[in-house]
Image (cartoon, rainbow, N blue to C red; front, side, top):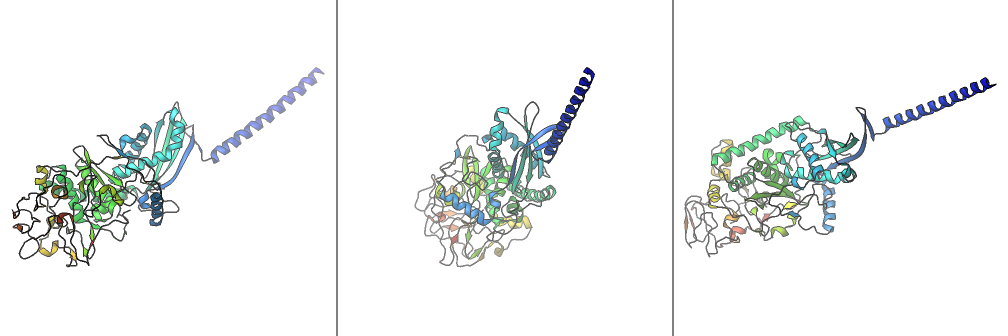
Length: 515
């Protein structure tokens, strides 16, 4: 009887164990099946990794369709005006605005993008403190927009970026690790963007062309013996205006890039700003790009102080006239190393000029504040005598012959278009600088017949053997106007800051459709 009871218990225990075993195996199978089908869980080298975040493709604002950009601009105008967000520290840098986690990510991205043949898909790991883990995950979208905004403003060599997509995987091995994977230039389903089909090799080849164009400028600066940052920046400024044609039709893949500004010599504001910044960086001159909702230009540091340079605005269009490559007929210096109190030739103060109202992101959320900019000096930069002497060596009328080896003829240097348009201003004078000679400048001469020239005399009937005077009755023995008598007569001492044009031909600044 006892034996039968024991046998019965053994059988019951066996059946229970078998049932539990099947149930456990089924659960394990289901769990494994769920793991394999769940994209949020990854098994890598025996370590379970959780997909904590997927960031969809985020295009740069400048590459959005024009209709979408205009809608975003209108929303921005309806919002409360954002006062200037500036940094007053003497050692300004975008990089110093990052926290330790943001610096890890920036360094990882920069390392992969800065290769001679850049990676367009890459991964790297960063360590996140456990106490910061949740905050990091919640703010990662903001963090990446901030980082790519800095990459866009600080590194013109990354001209080929049109946006990014990212995924973040998390795992723990004694400390929190985030593995971040980036895919650059991957167009969204709604938007096809420039450079989406480019490979690292394609970008490398285009960058070689950029380097060749940059080296030509460097050689010319060296041949002239320019050594001061002021003269070097002035040469780059004048070169880009002389060499480039503004892309009025907004057509072309490269018009918003460094490549357009240095190689194709056909661009809009981004091309001017990036080309200027790129060449200046070769000389270790601290130049950054800054943006508004419609425009891109530069800030430059001189002697620890920051000033404004807008190469695009110094290359204005004149209706009825064409200025092809190598023409300097519309070269201006009204926006060269100016301060925040500067009043332009269009009688608008810099800080009140609509296209220079700063925004602080490179993405569609244009009211978002991601970075700060350096504080601009109030007054224009005042060059030293050495800097003025070096500027006198610059003559853009020779540029075409230096680069092409052709023989100069008078017709080669004249802008084409209507001859009815006459203007007496700094435009067209490759040796003029508004900061050096403006009557509205803090250090300008107040004599009735002051000369708007670097080496002008303050006498009523002075003679100028090197650079033409804009005085009444001035004589010009070396750089005469394009007339048979070589005389330049002017009835207004202030015309260096104004234009005199016929009714049919008036100055038109490139104010709209920069971006």
